[in-house]
Length: 379
Ligand SMILES: Cc1ncc(COP(=O)(O)O)c(C=O)c1O
Image (cartoon, rainbow, N blue to C red; front, side):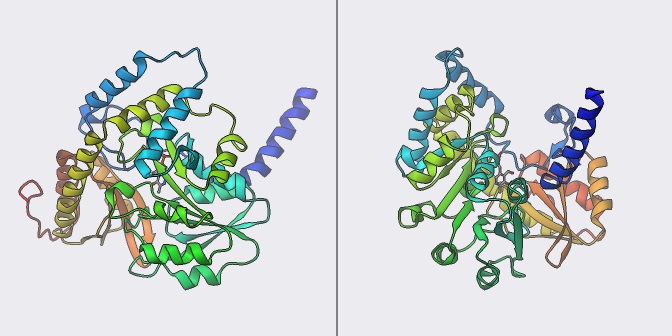
């Protein structure tokens, strides 16, 4: 009897609660863990294949050597905050660490948004802002980018009300791959009467960071990740740079203690001691990215946009559903985006290793008619 009552309540509760969560489970096409052996070009999640897996295994082994898993990771967290601080040019007091950038974003929403309040962002952009805002039972206002993917500053400011507490900007932006102008971001930070979050997940592949502005603007939070340039997506490590008071609240008030595990913290510190492998991979990705954009643009019925990230946004004349399935059949997995402003049939593809990019290009040449193409490998 009690059981039945509980079951009914749980069902009702879930129905209600899940209105304020992801519309569907946040999952991706799986079964690709052996993608390198199966020669599947896995280009859907902007991972970094340019740091050799063996090199990362070496760093992980080194990190494990002096690990004492019986202890809570207090020292490890302090050490990593200091090392990240050096990397970004701030004291450790300005660095909060989280379980991936997503977790940091979620905590920022927890800290600054309440039921009935609003956050504002651009469109299209990264989906986690919607999720984090929704979990707080707050509303997300989306303001479209201009047709050239630049910021509509007036549009953003004119949509702000007394309920708007957080502005999320992703720069470089996922999925449009462009970086917004420093001056425009600075103007928004100065004008916005709340917290401005600039998500710089892809900043290492771009031209500049806005993090230095934090010295003058305590309403600015810059979020970063170890998942992209650092090649550690599987370890779930992210951080933000912010005013020390905000950092303390994020680290010690809206997060349970020790929420990032010692292995990830230690490997994060190790890779910062070995920054050269990261810089080398970023350099290779930049080179491959330019080749990939050119090669995509040489295919009839395909247009690729310029990129400041480790992925490329492209569109096809053919319907995206057909192109997506045809790519999958040929062992190429990309992210189907659909409409981006007035551009239809858009896709996002990670800048992969040369063989992966070649596979994407060759497949698109087959799928899309009127190929003007030249060989990817020969550029
Ligand atoms: C713009 C942006 N921000 C943050 C993240 C989150 O990264 P992670 O949670 O892996 O640190 C991603 C991942 O794709 C992203 O594209």
